Image (cartoon, rainbow, N blue to C red; front, side):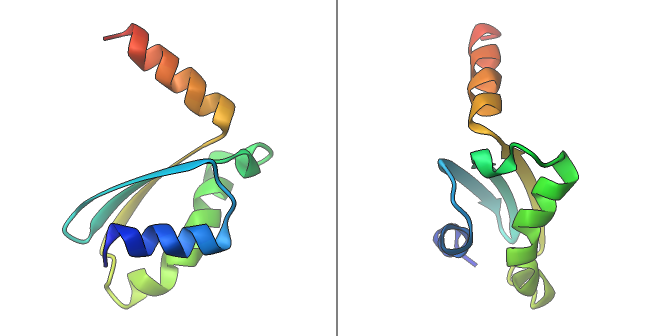
Length: 86
């Protein structure tokens, strides 16, 4: 499965501000930024994303994923902290 395909799947199912996906073979790291996560805990956020990718995990198009969901405010704060630590 290609990064572009995963972006399209999630784009058709979720409203988000930004998405970053990297891969190493069939292992994908997905960072998704959206305020739809604002009232959800971390597990609920991951489940929201995972449910749309589950069929591709079952058919082995995706072997493994790591999901990093953030609200827009959390993402901005994370990037400010990372920038200051450089």
